[in-house]
Length: 406
Image 1 (cartoon, rainbow, N blue to C red):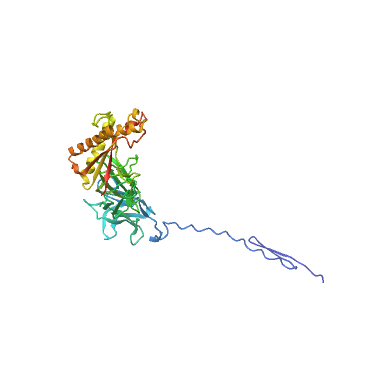
Image 2 (cartoon, helix red, strand yellow):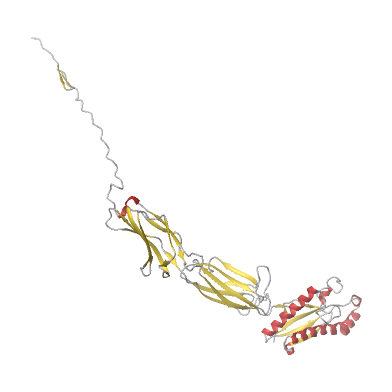
């Protein structure tokens, strides 16, 4: 009998099954259908929670000083709202950290403004001084309780700094002898907020500004001054200088405190150990005793020196001075020592003594006790320049002043 091989082909709704006598192939699986992605959740479809809100309020300064001086009278805040579609109400208040009291609440519906300001008032009165934060409260649809956030702290300060101010030594004498040549200016400032700047203005007796010391950072050490102005002038002896300390805090609140700085007699120690008073010498015309009859420039210098001496002797009654007169030796008397000595003894010493007496008389007319003044004539023995220096020997016709220390 012959073997019969056969294939049965069946068609079932598009599915082909081939069966033969040989080993069947691996079945063909059905193609997978692609998955349709689900839509991403959105903020509006998710449940709203406080942890998801990032609304913030930022303070744009660290101090407010509502005292109508035009400096820091108001303070501003920047507001960054979040999920504004669901924000229904908001309010802002200013909380006094020390007491917890909230001042001047402002409110609205929908989204708050991008910025808001506060003038430091609660109704008609200035709020209490101290540290504050701005408190922003926002209500959202879907939240059971309001969202609350705060700004960084800031200071409300309307009180000027409380100052102390002293100077030492009093008086001081910046004359280069290393004794009380400098004055130490010490001051403190107590304030609720930081100090912004300070300055010390020093005025002479005419009311003119003589020197200014200042800084933007509160000094950690005492201020030391040598008595010299920014223009290079030194304080006048026997003078009183008005000093005004001014300190301003970062809110613009300013305090002033005035003190008087006194200057002692200014001296220069000479080679022979004496103390020459630091003032311009009084100059004379040849063979003249009147120091007011000379060129206008020298007259002005003479009167100024005399006024300093009057001030010195009036204010420091414990001092005595010696007035020393000097003269110029004529050229014709320079070559021979005998001629020099004779001219000096008979003419120039009496002349120079008379010049010293003329200045003494002027001081007595100012009310100075004559017993405090000693006069001496030295003639041509101690010239400032050589007597044959025709251009400058006028400087030798002079009167000098020395402090008598007992």
